Length: 370
Ligand code: SF4
Ligand code: SF4
Image (cartoon, rainbow, N blue to C red; front, side, top):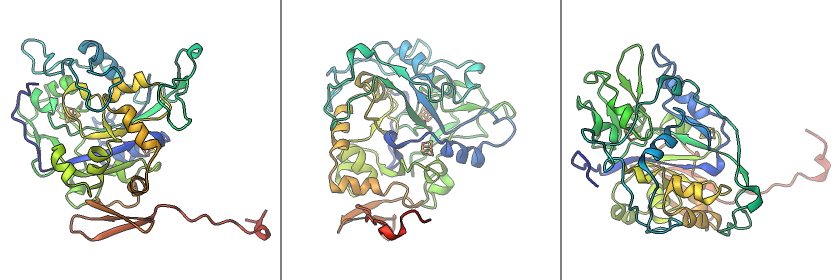
């Protein structure tokens, strides 16, 4: 794939894992971001973090359908998208129209107006066919009537289409953590970043007339603290930190919880990897959704990820127990004596959680009392 800028991989890349199976759609993440960064005039319609109900919801509406249709059918070398399967279709950079650096479109104003449209609206997959049992997920077949919540922030991509698109060179990727930022002094509001970001995560400020986007809560990250949307998550579905950018470096640093989940256990997958931006927010896919939908959304590795997630060992369970146990960014983990231990960048222990919670049975004499 040709990327119009020289690839610059930071040593440590801002990344996160979202466990879709556990999200309760409470929007606490959305509101925590809103009340921190986008409460000013001109930002009324801006939701840097949003949670949309799939398959119908979208912010802006139809963001994924519209680009997938333009890109054409996805082609993976294995129909079920097994690990190791190769994408042979075009990325958005390869499908760029003449004179553009990538394929994209500018959403209409009305498509930004209903950020949680179709909330909790399910769809039905041909009920005559019965549940999709192509993969044995420990007696949990895919449902015929289904929806799920998709949590979305900027992916702080390794090949950011927003950065490539900007004629002012106002967008840059930080070397220290890979966070992608728009220089507010350079931006002139041409909106090319909005047009070419496949995830539609830059947004236009109607008051300042320049573009803005998720800043990865970099002032918090610089202090070793997770972003607001991560720290506020009620469902405990999020773990954010800094991972190695190259898979071989990540494999050599398997004590980092994000490297472990993404590159060793491979249970967390990128959103629409076929776009070619190498997004850095990863998802543990939902277990009850028809597989064809998941293959399109998360690409190769869905079956393998769900198999591992459905048959987890103590180590994996321990790392998942660290989700939302602390606001500090965990650089390292260790599992011993039924406990998961997390360490910060200085190697100091910051959290210790039991993997099996003790079960305490209320004695009969306390029944019917408060
Ligand atoms: S998700 Fe969009 S805005 Fe964020 S880095 Fe990637 S291309 Fe840029
Ligand atoms: S706070 Fe967590 S559980 Fe609630 S909607 Fe956001 S991601 Fe889902």
